Length: 172
Image (cartoon, rainbow, N blue to C red; front, side):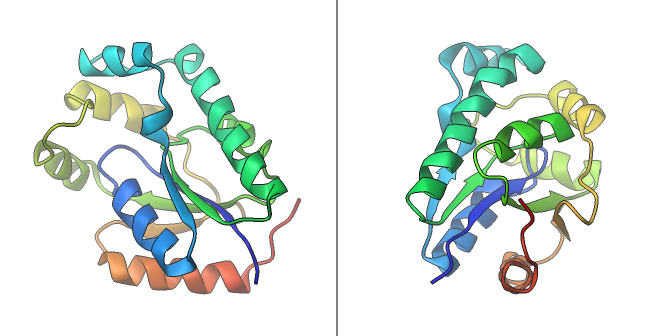
């Protein structure tokens, strides 16, 4: 059986955790929410409504790259939900697995904001943080990732992602 290391990426509110869990279930893979690996200082900063900068993200991204590397070495499948907004962030994650498969969840600011305002108990706060993420976002090109509209039903996103995984060879 083929094993995959998959990044489900997008800005906050795009559904990375929900879609990532469903995709992991479909593939009999582990799911890891990248947010669970943020250091306490990052969580505190975001809880205050202050966007993270590249220095804040560097160690967190290296930790997630190590997760991908561990799964690659064990030849096991994992799906990680992580914003991975910039190409250089995705390059850090690919250092853990050069054949990393990326599913990009894209949506309009209005839809993302609506989703975020309906969330309870999450440390991501405020329009300023959403605007910061959207400003930082470097959407992946088609050769880098499968792009899916978050307005699609989750089941449809999972079907498209599963079909894409088996039909698209990964380049190292």
